[in-house]
Structure formats: C-alpha cells, structure tokens
Image (tube, rainbow, N blue to C red):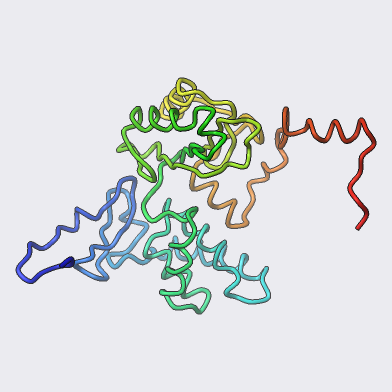
Length: 264
C-alpha cells in the first residue's frame, strides 16, 4: 500500500526545495513554504508573494484581465505571468491566479497541470527543447537528445545544478523542413547535430551571445519568454525572418504558376 504510514520518518523540508530561488511546499507540512537562498525578499514564510512582488503582479494581471469579457478567460496568460516570476507555476502563483480570477485553487491546478508549457518545477534560464517526433527523430533528434542529456547531466524537464540549462523532449516544433530542430525558450535553432547542440548549451552556460536561426537576434530568458506569452510583449516579435529556406518553396512555386487560394 502506498502513502505515508504512521511511524515513518518525517520528510525534511530541504528535500522539497528547488534550485535557483524557488518556493515549493513540503507535503508533510501543508502550507509551510520552503524558501531557497535569494528568495527571502520575494516570498513570505507561508509561500505567498512579498508585498512588492504582489503589487507588481497585480498591476500586470489587471491589465491582462481587462482584455477579456469573462474574467476566468485570463487564466492561461496569468499562469504564464506567475511563471515569468518564479520560473515555474509555483504554489503561490496558483493561489494568486485563483484569487485574481475568483476561481478555486483546484480549478487553477487542474489547468496548470494539463498543459506542458506550465512547469511544475523551476526551469533553467535557458530551456532547451529537442524535437523527437518522427521526422526530427529520423534525422537525428533521438541521438541529439541522448548526447545532450548526457552532456548536461539532466533528463526531461530537469534543470542543471547551476540553474542555467533545463531540457525537454518535445513532440513537435512545427518546423519539419529544418529537421532536426531544437528550441531555446521557444526560439528556433534549425538543422542541429549532436555537436552543435552541445556547443549551443556550452555557449549559453558561458554567457556568450547566441542568436536563434530565425526570429529576433536576441535570445531572452525563460522567465522573459513566459512574460511575452502572458501577453506583455518585448517588442521583438517583428525582428528577423519568421520563415526562410524550405518553408517558402511552396509559396515560390505557387507564385510562379499563378496559383491562388479559392475565394471565400
């Protein structure tokens, strides 16, 4: 029979803390937050946000909520908002969303645990996704994942001890014409090899300037990307080409032959 038994050793709160200044709950001490180093001024002893952080989050949340005719429709962007603060959807973040939207915490948890873009543990500054779906896998995606995971020393949705890199096995990046493809904080890195993938994470760890294959030349952090997904843009969406190479071949053929989509 699984589950805690009377007389079993009490779990240490340290077992439930996470790297890079995160706050999690110890299951054996419900409601008591574990605050890791660097977070003392950001969260309170019970896991809620400090007044300064709370004020800032409320200001952004109210702007986001005002865009929707029904308050609860803002839940998805608000989850991205709290993820931009904590690097994952923390217990405090879920409580904040529930309070702002008039929902129960259970309703918020049910949504945040359904979608894979909402993380349940702190992610790295650079969240690296390796596509292992059919075409990318055939073109070398599986080998890239195996070698990269060994190189970084972490597995799926795990973060390196220095908090710089986290890895994820992605089922599709919607960029099959550039297979095998990786993403870093949802920006494309096309036509990868095991060697280039390992060099990429080494450069990220070393703080070198790394530019995506397409899109903006500046690579934002995971928290910054989450803020953009919350609907608070960084004004970089129009930078760089959004499509290139093989993605445009069909369009070129259509134009050369005078083909057009049927009128609606």
